[in-house]
Structures are given as C-alpha cells and as structure tokens.
Image (tube, rainbow, N blue to C red; front, side, top):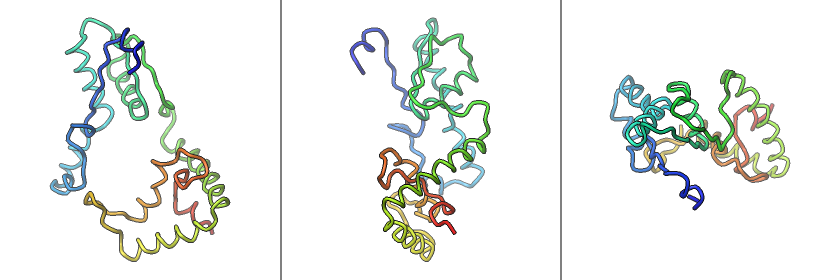
Length: 189
C-alpha cells in the first residue's frame, strides 16, 4: 500500500473465502460430496457470504467508526452485496476500482451485449491470425474425440472450458488472450 494510504487509514486486506490461506474450492474436494452438499458448500463462497464476513470484521475491529471499502473485480460485487445487506450507515465511502456489476439489468441483457462485442473481437483476431482458425478447430476436435483431457488439478479440460480460456486472459489487444471463445463465434457457418 502507498504511504499516503497507510498514513491516513488502517488497511485490512480480506483473505476472502476460497482464496489465499482459506480452504480453496477444488474439483477433488467437490467430488467427495453429494450434489446437494456441493451446492450448499458452494453457496458459502458467494458475494453475499463474503459481505457478511466483511461486516463481522467491521464489528470486531471498528464497531464505533465508519469504514471505507475498496473493491477490485469480484470485490465490486462484494461491495454491492454489502450495501444491499447492511446499507450505508457504517460506511464512509465505497471505492470501485473496476466496472460496476450490472445494476438494474438482467444477466441476459449483459450477455447479449458481451456476446456482440466478443463476436467483433473474435473476427478481428482471426483476421489478424487466420492460421489460428485451423489450430482451434484441431484442438476442439481432439477434445471431442477424447471426451476431454485430465488437468493437473483433477479437473477435465472439455471443449466448453477450452473455448472459455480467453475469458480470463483477454487484456492485451491482438493476442490470443483477447479472445473469448464461443462455439458459434469461432466457427461461423
């Protein structure tokens, strides 16, 4: 943290559920549970559960003072959940360092806009790197033939998972990372 921030604030970094030293969510752990038990356990990792953790920390550390929250990426979702659950009475401010989650819109609205944007990006990528069309088709065919391939963490790389690889990597223009694959966009008919 920067010196100015440290001089004016007591900074607490939340090691949210499923990250850092917290018990991680793994395929191996989930396979030890029945499906209803999996669903219940996974519900503990949602933004609303983590927002309750934030409130518990606030009460333990600073019950009499207002706090400021800062959230990046999923942290923004956690802050919105916190605001929904606990309101603003204990907050001095909330700082979002990311795009706000869609408020007042449905997930379908968001996905329709995202899909159109990704279709344009995929087309631009394949225009720049046309040789990748054949390579992606080759990988997809291989994964379909093998019905997926085991990953080191005990999961399976399926066609759907492969086609989503660009989702977490799409930050640099013109690179493979830019792409968010969908079957309909990659292989237009």
